[in-house]
Amino acid sequence: MRENIPEAFQSERLDIRCPRPEDAPLVHAAAVESAAEIREWLPWAIKLPTADEQLEIERGAQQKYRTGEDLRFNLFLKDTNTFVGGSGLHRINWSVPCFEIGYWLRTSMTGQGYITEAVRAVNAFAFEQLGAQRVEIRMSSRNVRSRRVAERVGFPIESIMRKQARENDGSLCDTCVYAMIAPDA
Image (cartoon, rainbow, N blue to C red; front, side, top):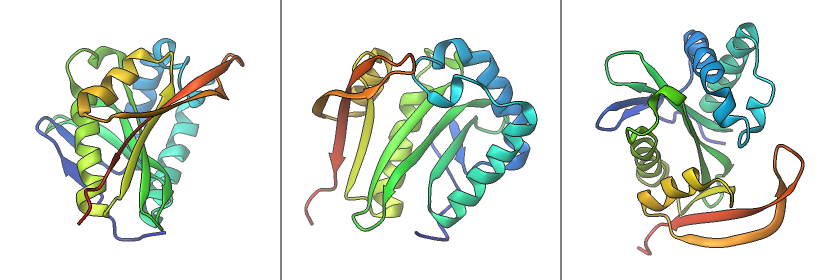
């Protein structure tokens, strides 16, 4: 685990930061708005948390961030407090260091390049601030939109693991693994 990880950074149009309890109503509203689109891909969206549960989720995410256990980010348009979506560095292995980027975008913000911008910034944060040696993005092979994000950011596909996981509907699926590694020093 690592402590004292910077809690905020920016991209061209986004403020990217550690979750805060006061974010809960904004995150909850975006999840409710986007449930139909994200439910297929994100297990937490199958049964959305209540507003009170979202507050506890944000508190827990903030604590995990501060201990380096899981680095979830809330994405906001710069200087507006408009919640755009979420990203993060998950499945952390500090001994390498290795991270997996996850992401989701609120429905009303799609098609504007926000998630691609966020993933680029999160990836740079992992390599430049956290000393990453490897960063992965994983998704169902059927999640074409998510695959396009990884490809736009420049992640090469490393493997397709056949029948590696279950979709939220219970069917078996193939998992695509995209990865970047740090250049040899």
